[in-house]
Length: 203
Image 1 (tube, rainbow, N blue to C red):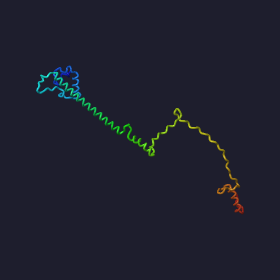
Image 2: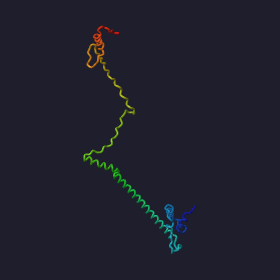
Image 3: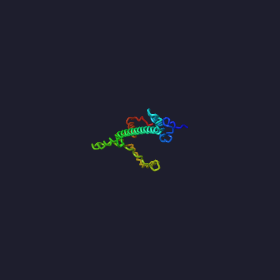
Image 4: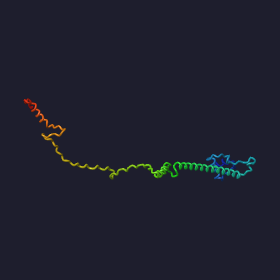
């Protein structure tokens, strides 16, 4: 097991057993050495060049180390505070940019300008922009989700048949209509006129 306190006492130029009862100071020293990588020359006891270290008591050396640790921790706290303030300024700047881009109420500038322009258009007689048409609601079917059956076919009324009128044999045909039933009579009349000696016979 490596004893940490004796090594710290040698590094900080402190007499032996100077850190035995200084538990909080030991924790602060380890934090500065390990986490922040602070060099030992900044925290150690630096005696006067014209003064012998033997004449300085161990309490005076320990007090100087405590002052060095307190000054270093104060400087680190100020640095952290400045970093926090800088982060807050960046956050406020980004927030202001978002407000400027989307408006103070959170809506985009285009929507705000459109809402402001609508009263002016109505005042000058212009029609407001058309709203988006909503799709029609789906047709309501019968309960159960089944399609409705088709209506039964209605019976068609039967109309009485009208008799077809046929022309009589001796009746005259209407103008522009050729009567086929008058052909035999016309042939007989021609036979009697042309066949004087009755040479034509029916077969």
